[in-house]
Image (cartoon, rainbow, N blue to C red; front, side, top):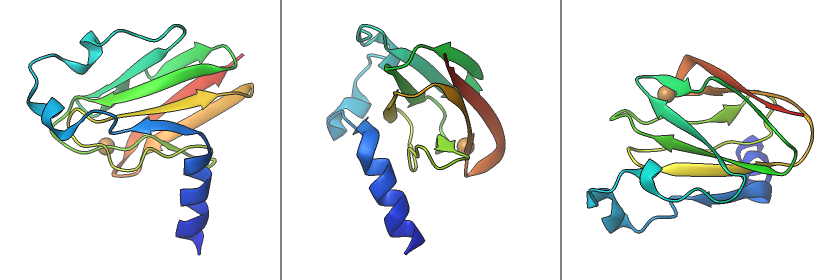
Length: 120
Ligand SMILES: [Cu+2]
């Protein structure tokens, strides 16, 4: 039951996950080389940290996480506002922050990985 609720919540505002075709993983082009959408903010997951660990964005900003580690990671809101699910190497996940507030999140696979998105 809980799992179903989480899926529904995540589905609400998750913009894209694994948007690249499977073949893209073999591509030499690094994910961050892709053009940013206007107003988009990127957070790189690498060396078991979210970088930057704190970002402040305006309401309506699309934030995209990209996993550059060999290990899988997630970006999971501690308040269950968003959840990337498992991101393998090169995978990305986007969420549009509509409301102001502080959004703490962790990697559920490595709970010591903590970061925050502030929407102002
Ligand atoms: Cu992790």
